[in-house]
Length: 454
Image (tube, rainbow, N blue to C red; front, side, top):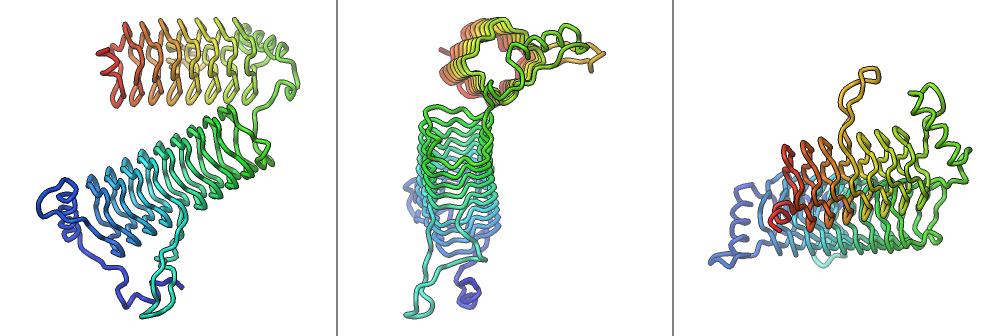
């Protein structure tokens, strides 16, 4: 039985209307900016479920034990706020500023925190206690059996740098593209969660449960996995560097295949694929090297057009002047690879990592497919790919899909982007001198104007 069942008659949670809430929030915002008549809002132990807080500045607000179920908290500023043991189930917190917020013991099950900033937030376990009657024993305050954690929440693209999430339950949670640098997840339960594309640099998962979690495209760097349970986890397509997996429990985890695991030699596979390409599929066999570790392999000039290379590890590989037309390189690890002057027309590179790759003179334009094999235009897809610090001088990327590509620090001099879709791409500190952006869609791009001015 929850405390609410026992104390409902005592009106443990105070309920107010939207108008009353708006008056309190107005005075709080006056307080934040130093206006006369302003007052710090203390909404602890209030029932504010289903009310609208969107776009409000509630920095430093007190909401200990508050019920905020199904609330609209989108684009709110809750920096330095105290939400200890709050119930935020199914609330909308997209784009919220939650930096340094105290969320210990709070329930975020089913909440949407996409694009929120949780830098230095404290999301560890915690219990709110209250006296059961005058002079009575302290008992936990629990609303409707809510338990601390983020079970089945959506936290896409959130910045969780330095966040503390020790001992929390984060089961089946979508954390796609989160920044988790130096985050503390000791003893947390993240089983079956989706960590696709996450930045895990310096994150601490000591004693954490990560069984069945998905790490496709996630970056492991100096990540701590001491006694972590990774049984059944999917590590295919993860970018791994300077990480010790020997201390983790890896039973049934999915890992890239080595060349020794293949039933044919690499040369045999390449020869059969070349025959397949030259005969339009009548001879030979299409190469399928998906999820294979080919780091530092020399494939200069190889013809791998239309091959399945999804989730491959090509870190440091030599692919200069390779033919990669319509090749599937989705989620591939191409960090530091040399692809100079490769033909990559119509290639699929969604979520591929090409950090510091050499892509000078590469052709990424569309391919016009004949009617006999489906017909139409086959566009190169680089959506959500990482090209940070890559060299793309003189590359041709016409009519390509470049949504949410990371071009930070890249050399994009004289690149031809004509007709490409580049929404939400990040060009921070990129060199775009001489680049052609005619007929492109650059809505939501970051750093493009500054780069143009420079």
